[in-house]
Amino acid sequence: MNAVDDIVAGLRACIPRLGLGSDVSDLRRLTGGASQQTWRFVATGPAGQRPLILRLEGMRKRAGDTESGIETEARLLRFVEPLGVPVPRVYHVLEAEDGLGRGYIMECVEGETLPKKIFQREDFAEARAGLARQCGEVLARIHRAPTGELGFLRSTSAQEELELEEAAYRRRGMRRPVFELAFRWLRHRVPRRSAPPALVHGDFRNGNLMIGPDGLRAVLDWELVHLGDPMEDLGWLCVNSWRFGRSHLPVGGFGTREELYAGYESQGLTVDREATAFWEVFGTLRWGLICQRMAEAFISGEDPTVERAAIGRRSSETEIDLLMLIDPRLRS
Amino acid sequence: MQQHPDITQLLEVVTAFLRSEIMPNVDGARAFHARVAANALDIVRREVEQLRAFPAQERERLLALPGLAGEGDSPGAEVLYERLCDALAEGRLNETDTVVMDFLWELSLHQLAVDQPKYSGYAEGLRAWDAIRGD
Image (cartoon, rainbow over all chains, first blue to last red; front, side):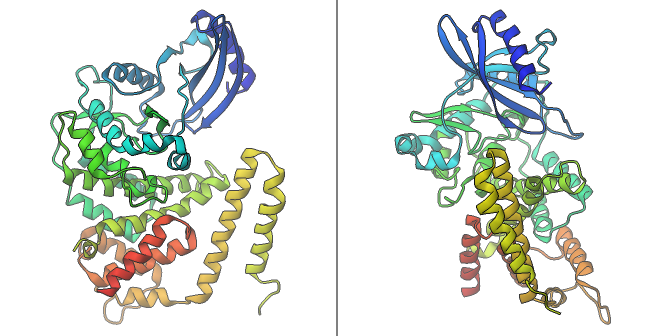
């Protein structure tokens, strides 16, 4: 069900029914992971042309995936929008009769997600200056969301996340001394359970943030959303891998921790600095483990592409980042 | 016996072929994968060069770490790495052991020099490592 023609046919049947237009054109694939695909298309109607996004569940779903499922993602987008979190508006969650598989149709928010463009575009200067603070404000709005109706989400804690990652690492059997050091370091610094668990985006970082000249326009990729320690999002946003060479600006290469924390605390929530330090080390290790996991998919023959093979060699980037964070001699 | 062209020369010519002949003449996704393939061959070339430059040094460095090998015990590098991993996992060796941390810094910088020398963290790591050694 991935051929372009099949998707166009499905959309032509469904778009008029939804009142979004009378015809469909210009379908092209934006991204295609193993678990999700993103397509852009244009719906044409009496009111003119409207670009839209189709999110589809991919072919493969791996056992033990912590992704929350595509309907959950759509449900979450609808849930957080009225809370002041910038997200694309969801127009339709696909049903069996749509014949397109599982997924949803949403607004196409224009802007940049590529870090290099975000760093360099001159018309983004003002947006950049306020971005770290804005990220703090938006994260606080996510974290203070009422969780009473979110029982369908995976609920977890720092302790459980660490155990999950370590168990997967041990199963894989690709031991690295620096990763062993980091796991032990983390085990001794697990933040106490924040009570009750908050709504956590799970992948709030440079690359998943849609930026325009006016600032943060949309928070994308809610695949890893869960209930847990909100400091996870703050730590993950500061992982060196997302600074893309601009290490002096720890928040995604565009801002300072002080700006991020000020934005967060302006919304009436408090930043636990020790917990964010834990989550930054955890996030750095996690990226190294993700690289290993992709390499494993190559080695097992599941995904025998040159891209998968090469990414395995990126684990060593995170080793240096971990030593920078852990070696006490750099802190004296 | 040294063969000619040697490994480095063969890798260089194939990498150059990918970059100058293939990449400009294929579509977007294939060009991307050709670039990834050329980068992977760069890793191979750097690893081969490094193996030539640092023969067998690894095992001696591991043997110098505390508690990894007993009297009359002569394990290979693989076994020593396993023991180092166990010691770090259990905390018998940790971030306060400067001789262990020095080894991990050198090991990681070495590996990154092969894998991704253009990663921004590599230059930073080198600076940090210089600062540590300067103390």
